[in-house]
Amino acid sequence: MGYRVAVVGATGNVGREILAILAEREFPMDEVAAIASSRSTNMEIELGDSGKMLKCRNIDHFDFAGWDIALFAAGSDVAREYVPRAAAAGCVVIDNSSLYRMDPDVPLIVPEVNPDAIDGYKARNIIANPNCSTAQMVVVLKPLHDAAGIRRVIVSTYQSVSGAGKAGMDELFEQSRAIFVGDKLEPTKFTKQIAFNVIPHIDSFMDDGSTKEEWKMVVETKKILDPKIKVNATCVRVPVFVGHSEAINIEFEREISAKEAQDILREAPGCMLVDKREDGGYVTPVEAAGDGATYISRVREDPTVDSGLTLWCVSDNLRKGAALNAVQIAELLGRRHLKKG
Image (cartoon, rainbow, N blue to C red; front, side, top):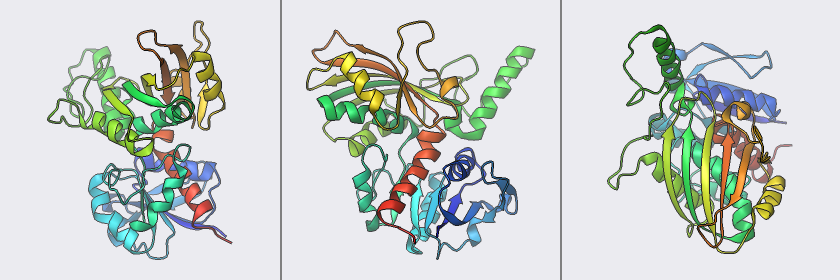
């Protein structure tokens, strides 16, 4: 006996990835509904590589009553209107937008990091999925924090254009082509040219000079992992289609060597250590694309602090940063609370 699962935003990058991962991981489903806006009504979308086609349903007319889980991948505006409606109908919502992440009554979950926090979902029938850059970072930080206690984190991100949706990917492609043929193409999705460039600006600016993306990494890490950890982030958009990379500097409360950290990360859930001190002995976004692991490379000691490490991590932002994490939350929810059969 399986679940009745609704995927909201099924035609977008993350929605399609959720459907693919549900099929790939053989999530127990008696029925799955692909939900989208009115303009996508009756569009057919494949359930991963299963060969099964789903006809998109109009969210305006969809009744969430009787459905077990709704995986939302449609942005904050849609979440604001429809998540409360689904939750009130008795359907547990796993929301990928930023809208509910810092709500004290909504658990913010990365299953490898804080699985016990999921028990708080009953307050509102909503579970939040963290920001993509936060998700991969806390998977790496958790086992190290358990071992030596993290005091401070400084992270610089190199985030792919797929984090900005299909429009971001299209803009990188069109600008790259335009540059090669000598055409002029003005930015529309990004504030500056993204092809062959990097942009130190993701989301809106805040009063203190940081961007909202950077703020998310700070507050979400504290909520998921430990409120005492100090975090400083600089988030940068780079001309990569899929896969976020991060250079992370960590200061610990207790001494920990690079070798100890490597041994810990080699066995940590969700982590894959690839750290050879040779040409090509590290992972880049190209290798991580399509995979669910968070890859860690270049682990080394920081001589500028008493107990510090620096490392590099890469993950597919559409998977662990969004779709896979959402499905893993659904699996955790099923094991702990919505048991069938």
